[in-house]
Amino acid sequence: MAVITISRELGSTGDWFDDKCYLADRLIAGTGYHYADKHFLSKVFREYGVTQFEREFTQTLGFWGQFDAQRGEERAIIEDLLNKATHALASHGNVILVGRGNFAMLQGLTDVLNVRIQASLPTRTAAVMKRFKLTDQASADEIVRKNDLLRESFIEAFYRVRGDWTDGFDLVINTTKFGPKLAVEMILAGVKHMSTHHLQGPDCKSLPVDNIMLNTVKSLLDCQTPHRNGL
Image 1 (cartoon, rainbow, N blue to C red):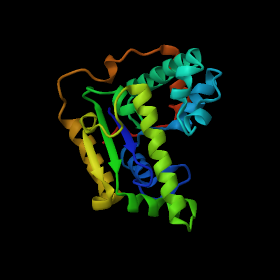
Image 2 (cartoon, helix red, strand yellow):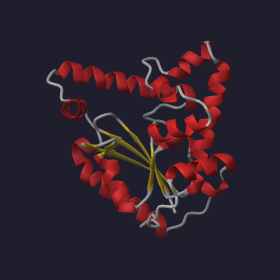
Image 3 (spheres, rainbow, N blue to C red):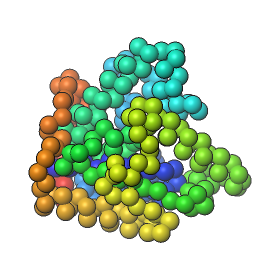
């Protein structure tokens, strides 16, 4: 049982299929793991009557900075739910967590593989042009740079670390050099290695877990659906 966290730069993870990038799609196929991203978290938040998460998540300045000055109580509620949801997902195990700060929250756990996917600006711009069917490179560059700003402001405000803090990752892959396909193979090899080489130390089962949140997560993951038990 393991957890994979994916922190990626926009345009670095390959083509998109519905709401999943190539890399996530292939990892799901290769592991049988559940998948959780910001859309999944939005469903969790709605279960608790919090409806503004995804909208605020994409604000230009990042909603954490706004809450500092305006809505401290609301921020505390959302932070608490994020912590509980992440811990519940990790405790559940066999899950791929795609998002901005999971790597920071799940540091030091022996059954978590924290992965950063990055690529050069030209690679990312070309991918964004293809995904959004853009013909103007300048517009694609702006989308990439704005996304980087959003990501950095969110991680720094909430987790107090930089998004490119390499010490926080077990595996950093540049897909300009290696491509998304080889990136998937590297990650799968890492998960397989973890399943056969058990390190001593705290794991996801040692996390504090809210049982109500855990039940919510299990329901939304549809755990009645059979999933293969890892690699």
